[in-house]
Length: 186
Image 1: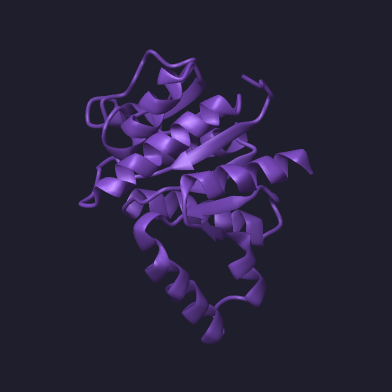
Image 2: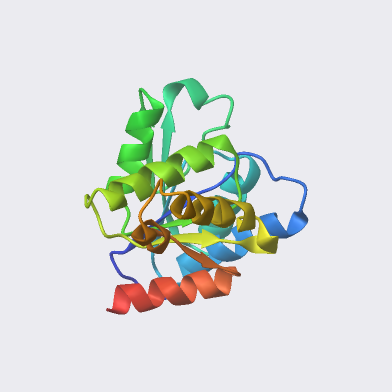
């Protein structure tokens, strides 16, 4: 295993969703992060896609930083057997700790929490607060509607054209890992 000091933050659902390919994508991404020697940074839950990505990374001998707010420890079945485990007081602190400990962000399918996390880092990027890559792992076309909405926001004058470039949709875990590798090598 090639070990680097890189870390990849994965935003994703605390549920599995209806399409089994999303769980497969989470598992492939987690395994790929571990195989590359990168650390997984995620929401510390052992449920849904969060649990799948972490189990895959840890199962391949990878390192994982889990960050969870105190009020979600029971609801998201916070994993305590991670390389590093951080309990925060608030959701905002969770997002900040996850972001600050990552070199790149990948969003798997998820719900409102995933969107909240994704839009916060995209807004920070728009404001010039970071230049970390943000990838949308568009497994099964899950993010097509979001990409269309962002294009609509731009077309209607509510965002600059440059906003679209702050996220990169990728179709598969392999494509996400390839893009991350290229970014880290640059």
